[in-house]
Amino acid sequence: MAKFDLEKTVDSARDGRFGIVASRFNQRIVEPLLDGALDALTQHGIARTAIKIVRVPGAFEIPLVAQRLAASEQFDAVIALGAVVRGDTPHFDYVAGECARGIAKVGLDFSLPVIFGVLTVDDMEQAMARAGGREGNKGYDAALAALEMVALLRSLQAP
Image (spheres, rainbow, N blue to C red):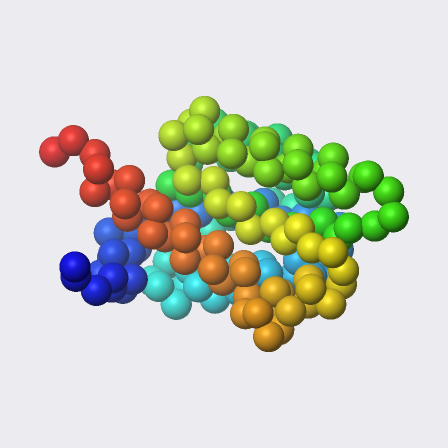
């Protein structure tokens, strides 16, 4: 089995256009995720002018805006960034579940990579660990997944 080469894989995605939907809620966590996503895209040859960032109030609003971006047919992938931190009420379950379900639906409805870069964590310590801390930067990882999916879907198109 051949070794996976990310650079070679994403080469065909370098001319892509990427939409990023970022939640303003839990901004202390989301901003490092956004920085990580932008770093990953630009480090892999995506021009900053090929990236559109749209802010939404919270994670629950991400799917609707991702749907609008997908429907515009201007983007090769959409990256969803946010953070839902568990509290003392069932609010977490509703927001996290509907956000995930909505993001998945947009991707399937539009046959477009819509990458789930929304942290769903138990506490702020877990969130910070995944927003550039000891667990890495999940925004960076989400952008890499977007690049890989764009390249993969392009390779599956009929000649």
